[in-house]
Amino acid sequence: MLPQSKTVCAITPVSKTNGATATGNLIDTMGYDFCSIDIVATTSDAASNKPSVLKMQEADDTNASNLADVSGFMGGTDFTIANAATTGETNYKFNVDCRKRKRYLCVLVSPRTTQIIAGVANLFRGEQAPITATKANVLNLVEG
Image (cartoon, rainbow, N blue to C red; front, side, top):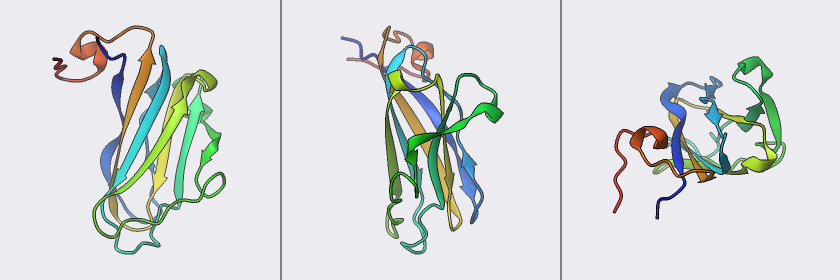
């Protein structure tokens, strides 16, 4: 059985300073019903240094100016952003029902202190199983 999943880099690992926004890559959800987005930040110097911005946006096309905030996925408005980890990584996750969303998703994170931010999106329940590494958006697709 081939899993009907695909991996996409949601945020290319980047070092950001206080208030600078790590804007994610567009996640094309076409052909997939569910997306799980994991955001990881390096250790913070203080628990209170949680992100000032942690949200998801969506659009029908790849024009970044058409991205709009998604209700339910806006930190500080729809949910309380948890304190940052002072040991280990700080992890956040968005689980998204793509059937209710526009085609393209994007996440944004603004740390309160200098941190490296990265993100990975896993798309699930695809119309077709990606049977090659290229279709799965990876360099190697190993199955067993």
